[in-house]
Length: 192
Image (tube, rainbow, N blue to C red; front, side):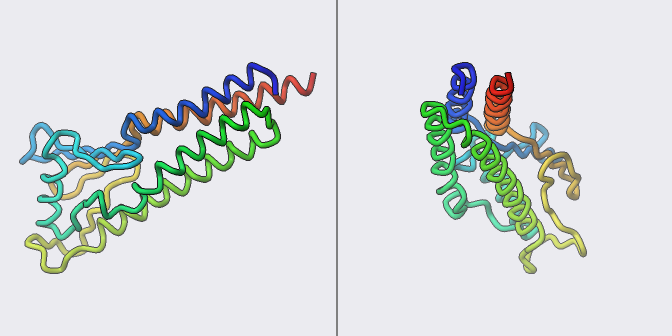
């Protein structure tokens, strides 16, 4: 592993730690009763509202249509995702410092698998959240589900939900891009 490749891999591993500083996913809701909108921020270790009372307001809306409340302490992924992220960062640095070029591609594939599992888990969470409704809810609309989109915008009754990657996700993709660049540089150097 050449020095340039090594430094790119170190940067890739360190950037992953920046994910702790920013939300990995943003869900924004626009509704007549909330003209300024309300939002949900999903971090690697917590779920918060965009503004101070947004999570409480979202849970209030959810109650009326029979959706479960969002209780961050009840979401197990928020407890183990930080450890996965730290593990990925540390193994990335180890690969760089020990110049383990054969492990570089394995690391990239592993990160992509973790991302895929995370997106699938988010989809399943949204499906359960939007389909398994309380039959005693004050507002019932036959054959209506309230699953938020994984990516994109969806109209749910009089609410428009927009779900997009946050800055934390962008950092993850930058990390993967740097690691892939490191791999390509190293492979090209080997071919010469």
